[in-house]
Length: 69
Image (cartoon, rainbow, N blue to C red; front, side, top):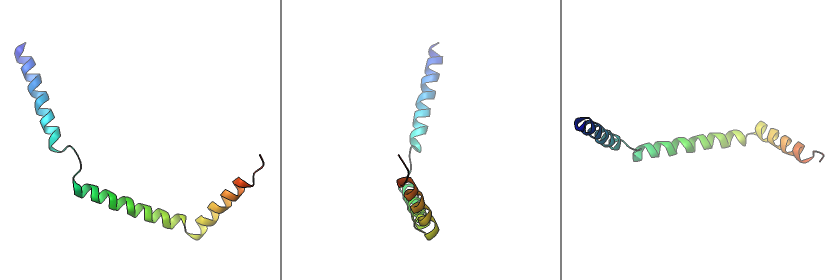
């Protein structure tokens, strides 16, 4: 019985140590994530401010504001 408990404790201890080796992102991964998010934001901004999309959004807002209550 004692050997089983020791084996389980050892397994838990080893698993805890292994999970701490690569627990989070490193600085370069954060930097790449930020660059990707900014690039996506720029593309989205360009799409939303383009002529046809801007006109469509303006039309939708105007129809919503002109609706009867």
